[in-house]
Image (cartoon, rainbow over all chains, first blue to last red; front, side, top):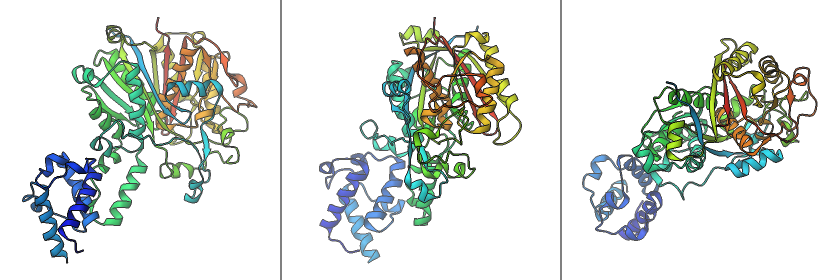
Length: 85
Length: 406
C-alpha cells in the first residue's frame, strides 16, 4: 500500500474519529494521541485492530513507544508502509 | 431478626413492550409478541417462530467503552435496569455511596460467542478480535457490564439455572436482604434473541411448528398445544429492605414473602411432578399462608404437552381448583433465562392495575387443565397475593410468592 503523508493523515483521522467517537476537528498534528482519543489499556487493543483494517499492517507495542502526538503516529505509519511496500 | 423484603422498581424490555406502560397494555389486551422469522428457516430451524425483540440503540445513553462489552443479554438488561432504577428513585451517585448489589439471571451468550469465533477464524490472529468480545462472551456479561456502568458496590454475580434463572435471582436477592447482608439488590433475567442461540433447542423438536399462525402458536394448557415458542429480552426488579425503601421514600410495589425451590434429581429435560410440588409447597410454607390466600398463579406453562400437564397437576394439588391461573407465555413465548423475572414483573403490573392477564389461545382444556381455573379472557380482579412458578432444564424449580405491601 503506498500513500502520501496527506492521504495517511486523511485516512487516519477518519478511522480514528469513527472508532473512538471523537470529533475529527480535535485530531491535530501536535495533539497528544492518548489523551485526545482517551485511550486506556483496552483501547490499544482496538487501535491495533483498526490500524490493521485501514492501513494494512499490525503495529507492535514497541512501535507505540515513539508515538506521543498524531504527527509521531503519521511518521510511524509512513515508515511501516514503506517496509510493507 | 429477619427483615421484610419489598420491590421498589420494575423494568421491562420484552416482545410485548419496551417499558411498563406498553407491557401493561399488551397484558390487558392479550397482545401476542410472536412472529415468523424467515432467516431462521434458512438456518435450518424446524420452527422459525420467535418473540420479536429489537436490539436497543444504546449510543444516546452509553459511551463507546461502556457499549463495547455488551451484546444482547447485557443490552436488553441495561434497558430494563434503567427503567427499574428510575422507578425506584435510585441513581448512580446514590449507589456509588450506598452499597447496592446485583444478581442477574443469564444462561447463554451464544450470539456473541459465534460472532467472536467467526472473526477469529477469518483473521487467524486473536490479537485482531478486539477488546470488547471477551466481555460479551462470558456468561456473567450482564453483571459485569451493569455493575460497572451503575457503580454497584454490593454482591455481584450471575445466576445460571436454565429457565428458572430469573426466578432464582429474585429468590437469592430476597434471602440476602432478609438476612441483613444487603439493603438493595438489582435482580432480573436476560435472554438473547438470535438464531444461533436457539438452534440446538429447536433441534429437540419442542418448538411449536404452527408457523402459519404465529400468534396462536403458544397455547399453554390448551389441549391442542404442540410446543413452545422461544423468546427473550430482559426484566429487572429492584429488591430492597423495607427499612431502606421507607427511608428513601421509594415506591413499594410488592413484598416477597415466599421463595420455594427444589431439584428433580431426575431427567435432563423431562418435567417431574414431585419436584414442582415440593417447590410450590416450600414457597407456601415460607410465606406461611393457606391456599385460599393466593389470588393468582402465573404459571410456568410453556405450551409443551408434558410440562403443562405436570404443572396443572402440581397447582391443583397445592393450591386447589379455584385460584386464577394464566401463563403469560401465551403472549410472550418462552423468555427462558429471563422468564422467572419477567413473569414476576408482569404479575406485579396486574396487581397494581387490578386485572388478570389472559392465557390467550386457551380454547379447549385437557384432562388436567380442566381441573384448574385458567383465565382465558382478561379479568378485572384485585390481586393481593400471587405465586409465580419457574422450572428449568436439569430439574431446577423455583416458586415465588409476592403480596401487596400493607
